[in-house]
Image 1 (cartoon, one colour):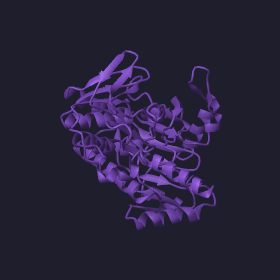
Image 2: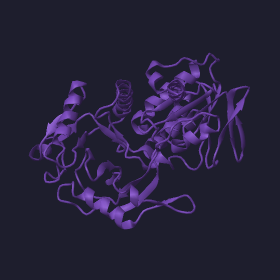
Image 3: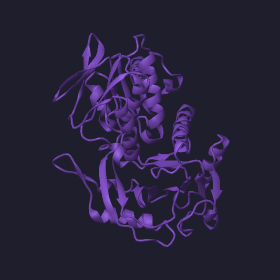
Image 4: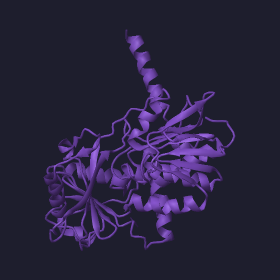
Length: 386
């Protein structure tokens, strides 16, 4: 959409993977970048993400293709140093609840029809594909996706920030809430409690706070972000390597011989405290750890060393929101549930758009303006019907 000359200075709001990735890609393209974070780096959704790298299951083709491109960028990073303990490609294992075998088979058939590497496995054969899984825990039929992986986003952010610093990026942490400045109808920088930062373009990548930030600009992005939790266990010696997505627990390996645990059945147990933070009974955390232990061979005792609770960024229609605001040129948005899988590719494509003024075709489906178009169409139907 934009026909303006390439941005010389860009302000990026957000210290998660989308903000940091976009900032680094902008620096690679020759921009001057200031990265502004509300608190510390990786202190939001990126610090409590299961960060499973995948495009499993059924989703619209443009979204599937973008996710595959995202995985491709991680494979390039992995190939540069396969010894990193925070980025692995050891596959993913999924099975559904009791009585859902037909759904599992249908998912497998859909995946294979789209050339997504998918293998049906039975409890007795799961060990042929990935180690450390209890056959008794596996459903009657499961899917193993050999090409999937995982990343520890805090470690990735630390890695990218090394390049950010080396390329001369400016970092402002603990700036508190920020807003986008607009002059003459265009984004002109950001304002924080500490003062204003002038810029030729702004990227809003504030996780679940993104809709609220752009709402101040008169732009509505529907928000379906739930409150969720990520548990990190104490170190445990165990050979499990795949990411597990099962009816009662999601599990992935984590650096330091720890495991990361997630799911959604416990969300009703989370309460919000007076200061805006969230709490959950410790016995619920222990129950999730027990559910995860039941998936593993030998049923090791898993102890929750820490857990983080907060809102998980999910747009109202479930698909990513990526690109420039139609009504505020120079202001770009990155808001998605799949921040881990899309982290590198989204930063790359957004930086390219900012620096060239040319829209990338892979982002056309995901423009923030789609919501205004739908609202206008719905209003028109209402008027016609009345």
